[in-house]
Structures are given as C-alpha cells and as structure tokens.
Image 1 (cartoon, rainbow, N blue to C red):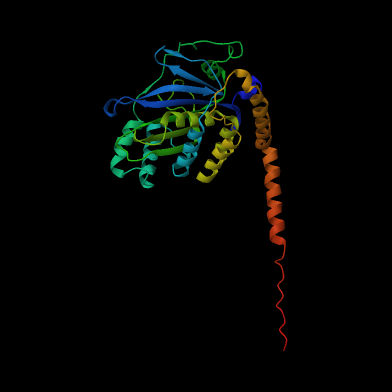
Image 2: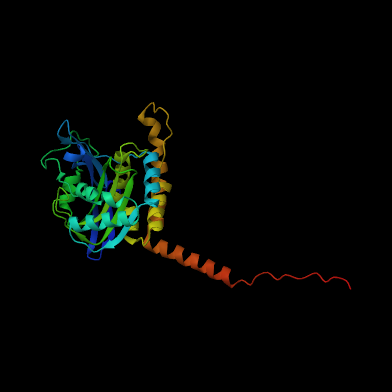
Length: 316
C-alpha cells in the first residue's frame, strides 16, 4: 500500500472538491471539579500520540486497535444517541441539543443534564504547536499529521471526546453529523471545520476502556471508506453497519508471541488484498451496480407466482 493510498482523501465531503479528514482525540483529565479535556492523539490517515512526559508528539504510525475496542464501539453505538445533519453552528448549541437528546432517550437522568453539559463545555487543552515527533525513520520522515493538516486546502474534522464521569450510572455514547462543517471556536488545536462529533462518557467502574474505544472511533473517522460511508448514512442501523464493514476488513493477530518482524511479512500481502477488495466495493459505481443487482433479484423474486397447491381428490 502506497503512502498516498493510506491517507484519508474523502471526495464526498463536499461538492467543492476533495476534502481530507482530520481527527482529534480528547480525553477527560482531572477530578470532576477540575476536569478539562486534553488532546492525546490526532490523525490524518496515520496516528500521532502526544507524550506528556517528553512534551512531544510521538512518531506517526498506522493505528493498531484491539478487537475488544471495536466490539465495544459497535455495541455502544447500537444503543447510543445518533443525530444526523444537525444545523447548529456553535459548540455550545451543539452540546445543548445533544444533552437534551440524551435525556429524551433516557441515556442519562434528566437531573444530570446540567452536569453533563458543563463537562462537555469544559476547556480544551492542546499540546504546544512547535513540538516535533520524537523520532522519524526513512519511511515516515516526510509525514507529519500537523504538516499534512496545515497543507490541505480542503479539510474537515472529527472531534472524539471520551472520559469517565462517576455521577453517571452507565456509559453513554453519542454521534453527531453536522449538516454543514463549521469552525467551532476553541474546539480544536487548529481552526478546521468540524463535521462529526463523537462522545463516550460513563462511570469509571465499567467494562468499557474509554481510551481504547475512543482511539478506535478516531481511527474509523480517519479511514477514507468509513468516513465516506458515515457522510451518507441515514439511520442508526446504517451507522453500525458501517462499523461492521470496517471490522470485516480488519485483521486480528492471535495473542501469541511474535518472535521477529519477519513473521509478519505475510500479513502485508493479506492485508493489501483485503484493502483492494474493500476499495473496489466502496467505489460509487460498484455500489450502484450491486444495488441495481439487488433490486433486480427482489423484483424477479416478487414476480414469481406462488407454487400451486393441488388438493387430493378423495374417492367418493
């Protein structure tokens, strides 16, 4: 897979031209009274993680996800709050409508609305802009998420917010797609128009790993095919189907010791074949042909008369 192929280039984001996806993962840090959102990772195709101890961004790399995080993500989206084509234009109004919908769907107790809204609107902290990756190798030396983001003329962002809130009795997940991408004040480290928001909050004592599930959602939003799919979904079911499609094309490595990198060489060809098939099936013309084929099959099936039944004539 070439370097350019790995990048998320989304041609369906708007009608004005090619739009590339930028994703930020923000995690809730600190106690409830002094909580704040801290940016911990960012994506433009590849992933970069911030190392707070070193005070630098780490090296860009292909995202690696746990199977459990993908299963948890799909499961929570099945029962989550999904708002498509929201027309709000500010972060405050988006979060207010989102929290109202959480309460309406009984995802949170109405008495917790103010507390949840207050947390979602807490200050966001981004690492210093002049920090550079810790190390680079020959393959990735020309790649930087920030450089690629700043060099892109057409860019749309996804905000992923995850963290523990112990006044909630169960995890709550929400997905928002804005009708028009909007620059939201103080939302991201750079003034990039935001198209999608994902929120996952809940009690500390839960079987959900908020960090890994947040990384999983961010990696999906940075994926070209998934990003195109969620721009077009019209229901919660179609959203979870898009997650399932991503999982179908993902590779799981068994929990066994890897003696050397050479043992992973065969994985590259296997993954490339999965990717080629996935890109072919995601092509708009291919999807149209598959849809027409499906319609024809349904039409033919509906036109076939039911089998005739003959009553056995009983002798007089």
